[in-house]
Amino acid sequence: MGSKDRILRLKEETRSNILTAAFEIVKEEGWKGLSMRKIADRIEYTAPIIYEYFDNKDAILNELTKMGFEALDKVLEKEQAKHAEPEKQLYDMWLAYWDFALNNREIYQVMFGVEMTCCIAMVGEAQLPSKRFCPVIDQLMSGYEHTMEDCKQKYFTFFSVIHGLVSINIVGDGLSTKMNNQILNDAIGGIIKAIQQG
Image (cartoon, rainbow, N blue to C red; front, side, top):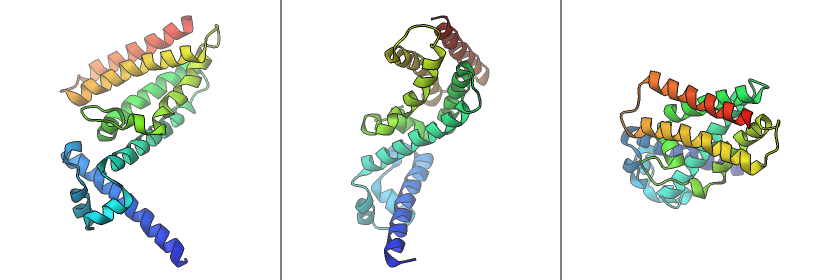
């Protein structure tokens, strides 16, 4: 391996270590506990080295936000591939969305600004969920005349309910598993049925 390749690899490793350290701190102390100094201490570098890779804490949050949306998109893509029927795709994709949110609470918080300032407007990856869901909704609406704007509205209907339920469970004491499952089944099934009926 040439010295140029080695330097690039080391830079990428350092960048990755910074993001890993940032996420570990957040898991332990929450988003308010994150600082450039703590990241530097965690990876045993000086703070100026961290600034060589990221201008400030917001730049790190932006990168973690991008990574979160990319990870969510992979989860949704996997679920979508399991079925050919759009109603089954939508059902499983929204359940996977729910699982992703609750299993990755800290990342979800920064992605959507749950109890914190979010970076959603700053990253193009924030469009990935709607780009993944809208074509499936479009397929479900294929039996009657509609526009992509109609599909987007249905996407936000789903999103509003699921994101609201996620937020309730992240912010407060949450609901029981039984109640969450009932709400999810009623909401997802009800919206799918309403879309099918036009």
